[in-house]
Structure formats: structure tokens, C-alpha cells
Image (tube, rainbow, N blue to C red; front, side, top):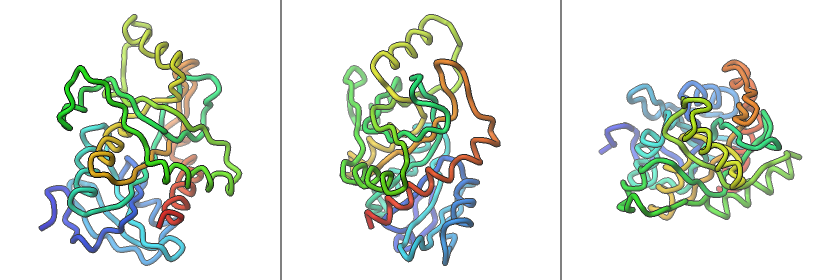
Length: 244
């Protein structure tokens, strides 16, 4: 039977899944990039679509916001629907001056300030940074060259809190520590995706567009964020079909 958060039948979801955070972005992707689209699930405002991109079967669904939400959907896709690969596309905040607004980052490995690792029976005082699947990452790198994209690939960090107290010492030093360690950017979902894919021995990749720079506080409006996702979507889709 379907899961509590997905009422699709097992054969209705493709082996390769594109996963933005925003449910509305899913609809935009399927309207603009996929053909022969079928909505195969609709539960709690999260829809799942399956269609064709360049004649390759792909499903598109949202993770929602934050590590707990990502963990639910990725767990069910990998563990119940036996999905092979998930590529997350989302937005991020940069810690480095040379990672600029609208730049694309691929997360090679994700650290976190959360204790969500305890859900995988990893003690809270252990430090586990799950990684992307190397073959999927390498495919994305090859695709980026074909698309003539300037890509940043490296470590990222995943945080529980979007809003933090600016210039309060613990938070200020946390951001400085990440930049000193050459952490490219932060988001709120990648850690859960990578931990889940590693646990199920499946493939995952997180492709992020920088929408705010935490060093100089520059950023994009919500409208501009929506208008600047095309390149990231195309990179993710081309990577998925190269992996198909």
C-alpha cells in the first residue's frame, strides 16, 4: 500500500527523481520541461508528477522545507518506492566572497549543526558528514562543461534555523568558522538527503543556487529567486537522463 505521505503506486514513480523544496516549483518544472505528465500522488499539498524528459522517465516532487521534511520524503522514495537517484535543486546562502549571487554550487559533502543524525542511530557526539554519490556528481560535472557553466563543487553545511540573531557572538563565530573551513554555502535539506541515500545505498546529489551572501548580506528578492532557477533545473535534468 502507499505510504502516509505518498499515494502513488510503486510502478508510478520513476527510478530517477528531481526534488525541489517548493511544491509550486514542481508544477513549473513539469509544465516547462516534461511531456506525457501524470500526477500520481497528492498528499498534504505535496504533488508527485511522472513524465518524460527527452524520452526518459523522470518523477518530480517536493521535499518541503527543512531536514525533517526532506528525511520523510527521501526515506519513503528510497525505502518504499525503491528510487535509485534523487537530485535536489534548491537555494543557498554563501559564506565566501567568491561564491556569488546566482552561482551554482554542488554539495560534495554536507555537515550540520543539527542532531538529526541520531535518527540513523549515530550518537549525538559523533560527527558524520554524508557525501554525494560520486558517479552522479561526476555526471553533473561533465554536463556542466557541456553547458559551459561555471560551477562550484565542495563542502556545504545544513542548518535547522533560517533566521538567526545577527552579530550575536555564537552565531557570528559559527558563520566565520564555516567560511574559515571553506564551506561554500548553507541550505536546510542536503544533509538529510545525503544521510538517507547513504543509509539505503542509493544515489543523491544536491545542486544549489546562491541567493544570498552571508558575508556581505547581498541577496535576491523572492521573485528573482524564482526567475533564476532555469540553469539549475536544466543541469539537474540533463544529469538525471545521463544517469538513466
